[in-house]
Image 1: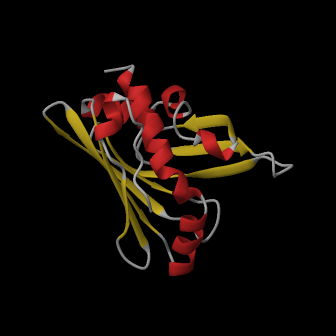
Image 2: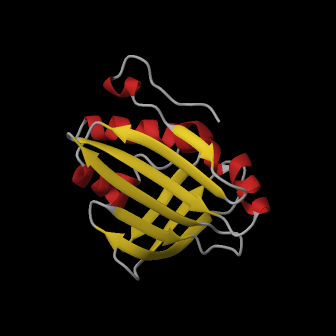
Length: 167
């Protein structure tokens, strides 16, 4: 997968690195020019999350974003897409929440859902985000790579833009 950069922006030096770690694992890393608590807020507060999560290029709209970000809490995201007549929902449970450090959630909409772990490592006012997904099967990872995972560099670039206005 290609790296994402938006030339001319302060975040242009930050690169999104997408790697397949194993037959069932995807790892995405990017450093953001913001402290961990601000980056964590963008992942854990619905009003911020919905401003960057959907890649603009895919033509989808995030209709609703409900997040109860605590261990045992849940989330539900409902999208619309011009190619689908019905809204599409994604939902799951937060398995672990350590403020400003780590989020772990399940993707429960089907038996091929991944477990996602996001870590936030601050160093000198910048934060390295590591997004790790473990899929139940190789086929499930292949399906993700052909679909939503392609948007991750764009999503992370959009998060960079949001953070630039908050730091």
